[in-house]
Length: 338
Image (cartoon, rainbow, N blue to C red; front, top):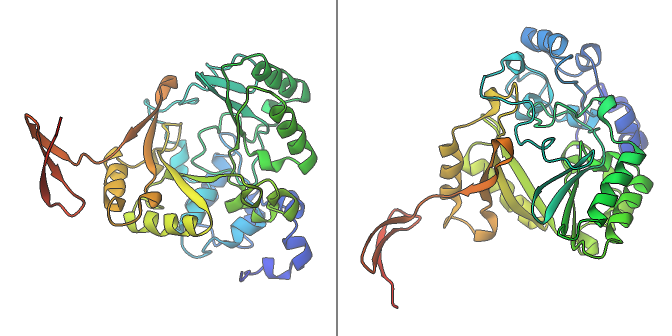
């Protein structure tokens, strides 16, 4: 990739070292202004939002930002905005009630057969639309060794759990040895059938996907899936989503979910109408392979769980005769034969 100043002076060995990237994250206005022409609003936001949600971005992710365009999609996801200080009455600190369904620290058990394990509260980049900003980047909330032990012990003592999602923060911010310890202990639980990693590191810190780590991923038979949060002005167009999903499939990654952005405090400027997501899915269906059409879901507040939405192609019914609209808008009769 082409690196812009000041990053072009960094030796390749350091640039490609994920631990160097992590250690040299950009955390303040002075550092950021060396590579990005900040607007007056961004300067003010970096100062006033610090107590609400920390700012940090890797040199790699910063190098993707257009330094002159305030509307650069990468820039809007990484750099604070004054809009983050606008908290609506409908927005929640913990929009999915994850902490309410926490039988032991750092483990959410909301669905009957699935649990969410928080292995770390650190991330390479603190995404401005994060739905866990209440705890992510807060050193006091990071799980201790004892708390991880208790969480894993809970999974072991709960046979109904067959699927654990290891999340955070970002679990790939852990060292290989720490990550291996967590995964090995989970894999030893007899009733646990599925172990998943929820990470954005391939986007924010691709250097973390080393050869040693890749042995656990696609080439080792692991299934890779993508979850995309629908963000206003960033990825809320069907052509953008279609291009992304085709790229994912070429790289053996399944487009799994499009998430409606959660109603977390200070994120209303990112949210789209629900109809936008429905229209995107409708614009994909039929015009591309079904493999490239993800589920569009809303994760309901207060722990209601995920519900999927899709375009309604069934237009009506007269007895056994059904009236359908196809992806081109053409109408077809379908008679139920039973």
